[in-house]
Amino acid sequence: MCRIFGLLDPHLGHDALHRLGEQTAGLLRHGGPDGHAHRVFDGGLIGGTRLAISDPAHGWQPFTRDGLTVFYNGEIYNAPALRRQLAAEGVQFSTDCDGEVIAPLFARHGTGAAALLDGMFAIAVHEQRTGRLTLIRDQAGIKPLYLFADGGRFGFASELAALLRLRGTAVQVDPDALDRYLRFKAPFGAVPAPGALGDPTMVEGVHALPPGHALQVTPGGAPRVTRVAEVAATRHTDPVADLGRLLPEAVAGMLPTDVPYCSVLSGGLDSSVVTTLAARAAGPVQTFTVVPRKKSAYDELAYAQLVAETTGSPLEQVPVGGGDIPALLPAVVASLGQPNSDPIIVSTYRLFRAVREAGYPVALTGDASDELFGGYDRFRALARSGDATGYRDALAGVPAAWQRSLYTDGALARLETAARPDDGPWARSHACPPTAADAATDFELRHRLPVYHLQRVDHLSAAHAVEARVPFCRNGVTALGRSLTLAQKLGPDDTVKITLARAAARHGWAPDAVLNRPKQPFTFRLADHLLDEQGLALDWARQVLTDPAARRGWFAPDRVEKLLAEFEERRTEPLAHTVWALLVLELWLGQIDGGVR
Image 1 (tube, rainbow, N blue to C red):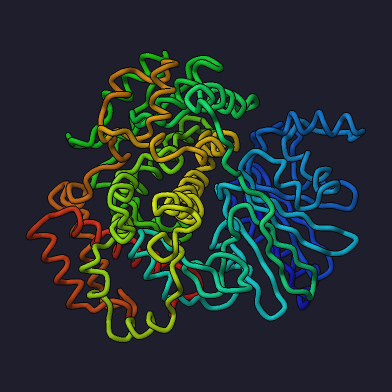
Image 2: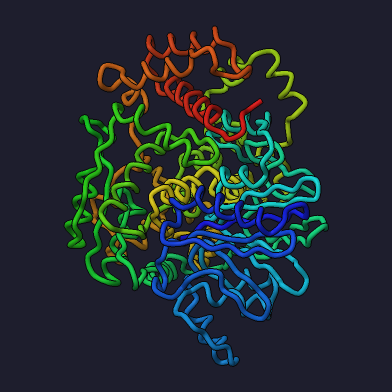
């Protein structure tokens, strides 16, 4: 993992650009603590920070070849095969780093090189002859790229805070994105405006390059965004058998050889499978699991211990409780870039901190399996009823009854004028994809998975200089998952992910107790967290949310106080999630650089 950034600004000289490069690298050093570099050219800057994983001694960026300068963030898992092909064509390499294949591939294929890469990546390429800058983002959307273009200036960065430093202008919240945050727990799901740089974000004028897309811009020219890579469905006559071959190869092919690695183990099917396959490929692997400080029905420790014992892997327990929230949540929100109200954010942050403290710069995770193989109850409900509205409501962070009632009249007026159309299955015809369930899968993979899920994992792992690797996002596994019919995802007896479960059972990828247990989210009951230790977190949340400076004109003070009182009285999960969503948002509003209007 590294972090990258860049700026085109015809008004800045070389000295100013060098200073800006140093300042921006400082904001991204947590994700790349092992070194940083930047290159300045007329009217422009490109740079990055490095977490040294592949060929730590020699794989320093930028990579330069044939007038190209390359910085990138991520890992190219099929680099060995690409290196062999390029070497056969006469290309000579000076390091064993995976990223060294990017420049010769780009020289031969341009943005088409993206379709040849199997990995997670955000790539920046500067062409010396033309001055053109090209950005490319991986097909799954694991590695984010934030963008702005304004008044002849253009900038990009791996994290929002760094981009805002490059942009240097006051920050204004995007009203539609804020509303989407309340509706979906993160700001996603809008149809981008024609000609936009990419997907809108919480900050007006800032966009995210969509997964599988490239952006090209020359000094003084307008950026052009095109789709350059997509993992299409590949039909399988026996998907269980094919997954039995593909997934072990995927995991084995992403185990680093130059640095130690570990596995995040929740005790659920996905992380159990990844841990087992890693252990089979290279021997027992250190594992980490989150445990509640107080006894909870959500405690999965027994299952995690069973998997660790079965694979001969040591297990480190990472305790998290409600009392940790006041100390951790501000740092968590600052690391996220954009607000995300999944309660898992605190335990994820704490877990990756423990991973790095134990000396592991790489961690395998089981993320993205639910989206690909059908792990959510909302898929089943949608398949049964065809009610896309119910599917939409199942995504909500704040219950529909509360969403609009919290806003001030002025905020509602702003929302009316700023609202973008939805890109969800409830908002469009299902002629293509043919069913609401197919449309929901497309929506999850295009919008929800990158922003709500993978971005969270990327940012919270990078906060502690850990590279999170996601086997279920390997190209071959994704292509198989996209090909599955609903009947190959959901069983008749309320079982989910049946193709993955059958492959795991056939090949012994998880103990029977894990295979046969009900699905459980990797989180705790939020109401218990807020009320833990005599309501320590709730008292703190009340202080934050009732501060006179809070809400910034978005939410009516009397309605927020009513919400807090109702939660104290009823102590339900929907009300707890509403309090949590407002708390995360208020912390984000207070932290964002340059002030918020």
